[in-house]
Amino acid sequence: MKSTGIVRRVDELGRVVIPIELRNKFGIAEKDPIEIYVEGSNIILRKYEPNCVFCGNTKNLLEYKDKLICEKCAKQIADINN
Image (cartoon, rainbow, N blue to C red; front, side):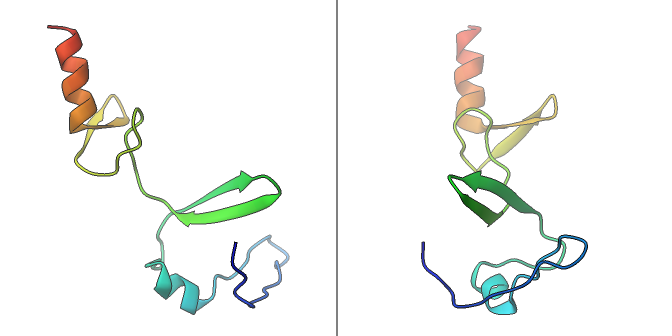
């Protein structure tokens, strides 16, 4: 993991400001959803991208019963029933 040399303090509400240079670099705009997860002893922030619940693909997604499925997985599921 590469250090940016940027240090920010957590405010009284638990917020941290992501520097504009990093938001620009990663294409994060105001109101964009950010995914937060833990990897070992690290807290990871990443721009949220919806993906297929089966394979993780982020392209050509279809919504089925409030879940996202890519076209390839949807076709494989349809083939099971035939």
